[in-house]
Image (cartoon, rainbow, N blue to C red; front, side, top):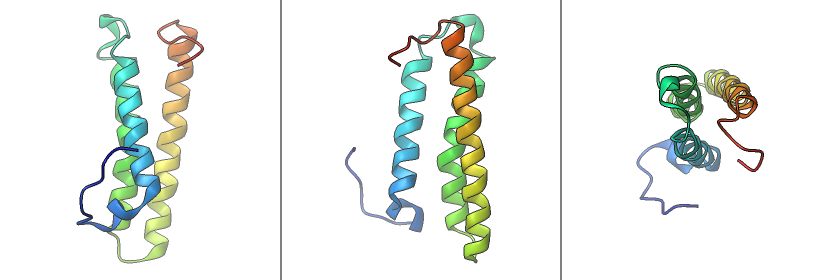
Length: 100
């Protein structure tokens, strides 16, 4: 895991948020190899859905109730599933190899 700065916000204390940020890092790194004609297609979609995971965890952590937070965690999970689907398409199109 990367170096963590002092926590200013509640979400920065959550391991799941840090893992979501790391997931975004991996998606950005791996999607750099996608064909340039996918820049506004699959590359953009997979990056946006990956970033959305951490963003929804962060946004939910700022809500007043645990119920609201849980709703945003559910949305984050949906974004993760969307990312996995996009990555499967990328794999099938041979933009990613089996190891990635």
